[in-house]
Amino acid sequence: MSSRKKDTADKRREISINGEVVKPGKKSTIELPVGSMIDYQPVTMTCHVRRGKKPGPCLLVTAGIHGDEINGVETIRRLLKSRLLSGLRGDLLAVPVVNMPAFLSRSRYLPDRRDLNRLFPGSTKGSLGGRLANVFVNEILEHCTHAIDIHTGAVGRPNLPQVRVSPGDEVGLEIASAFRAPVVIETPLREGSLRATYYNRARPSILFEAGEAHRLDPDSVRYGFRGIIATMRALQMLPPEKKPPKRMPKTIFSPGTTWVRAPRGGIFSVSADLGKAVSEGSEIGLVADPFGRLETKIKAKVDGVIIGISREATVDEGDALFHIATTPNPAKAEKQIEKSDRALEKHEDEFPGEI
Image 1 (cartoon, one colour):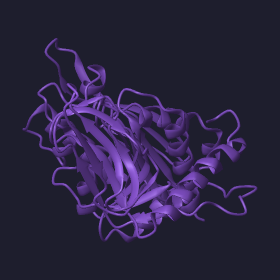
Image 2 (image 1 turned 180 degrees about the vertical axis):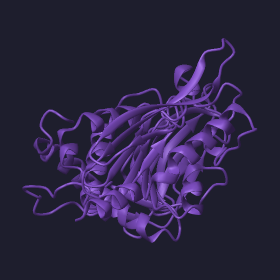
Image 3 (image 1 turned 45 degrees about the vertical axis):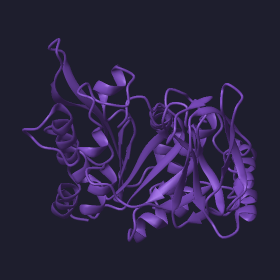
């Protein structure tokens, strides 16, 4: 290749964030200014850039859109330390904490109690959250070709490791398959969410959910780390596995989910847990009057597997108790989920010292 052609190729692959240009084969950690807090301390967003020498996709991995969701932050931390990135082809953009104000206050929400994941794509003249979203979209998102966003359940409401994909996102569905999560669900887009912004800008993306807020769950982190590496291999951003497993557990694809809510307040006890099969009308829990007068059985509304559950001992009427992913063969789905958990342990030596 002539020098002129090489310069043109490099320019075409230019990544410039906050005025800093990162060339192919280089890496950088860039601090993006967003605004300031009440004490005049600056609000920043940290973006890690890893560029391979050879061209390829640009994968954007994010966490911490909600400041109390820690599993994704740890997953990206381990990803950035991984020796596997030495064989990177294409580009990796990683933002461990998108929402630093919420992360510092250990809160799901911004200081003004707004949910950042309802403020995308943001505005240059809006609230702090809107400005933060705008900086992220214009400085970071515009460079990516594919994206993975990591979340957890709320406090006291853990989620089974699962991937959510947008309707009509065929490439996103391919990414979801490569990720190898136990369950993949097609879920509607919500206005103002990051996933909707990816979709509107034709960036294939998935959302990975695992564990709960304020808790660092080792299995959730391992699923996330392995999923990102598997996705990068599927996108040919990393070399294939040296010894791929002969058989991998199949992912359960669900067309939708439903919530089971408390019909009245009281003491809540469960009789079915995460990953377990349920059938329509089967008893999955109990809400009891704390004074011993009444007991109300909680029954499943559909056939499926439990992907989210409340760990709260006391509930009010209307509280979400179970999140169920629908599937025509719940018993088979439960067995596949159990195989996924065993496979996670069996193939732990694939990443020695990294997960």
